Length: 292
Image (tube, rainbow, N blue to C red):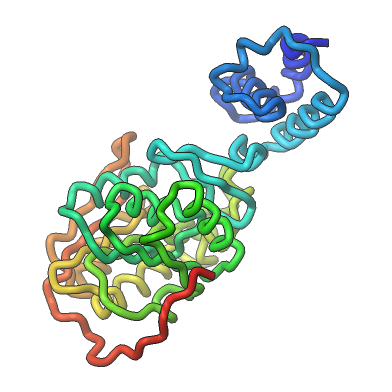
């Protein structure tokens, strides 16, 4: 049996999966099995399939039929033109988050960047790659997530300018920064029950605060000024119905030039604000950084 015959024989197993193109999904999985770029799979459709290849491919199809995302099956995801490793410990970086990257890059070069809740490192590592002279601290409460982020740091080649710290938001953060970014959990507990099945393969801690979806923003907005230089920016990703609520939190915390930016679909996706005051930490004890 060749790959074309095998793919055609299993396509019915994905009939219940929400996808734009079943055949594309199957070609990606097949390409993963034979370790070629998916764009070249058409050149291998008439290659014979070994017993081991068929076993691995059918296991991947079983996972896809259970609504597991392609990225989780092949353990990688393209983001801002770079390939990131992903697993079940990290949020799958999505195109919506590229709106945040675009907003950051519209600013002048930032030299000290803090990425709160970095997950796979998609935000902080992308900024480190785009701004080679910037120093980036990536934090996360999950050591498993930081393991994946460090792997991505090495793959992307930004080890000289990136450091990691296990931290619950600002808990272990020291120093001041001219840019703080975050894609915090913003899904409310009520919304959690209605999510697409694929999304629920991401870690729940990265998706929902088990409350109203605004808990992280309350913490970040209230405390960020203590870690921002005058003229620094705070930029966060939000849920598409949270624009007004998060802007109000920024306003209440003393940020100026607060604005909400849309994603490619025209939905509210990013809130940014300028810190025009002095940072609130009079004394910060040096505790050093760790690559974890």
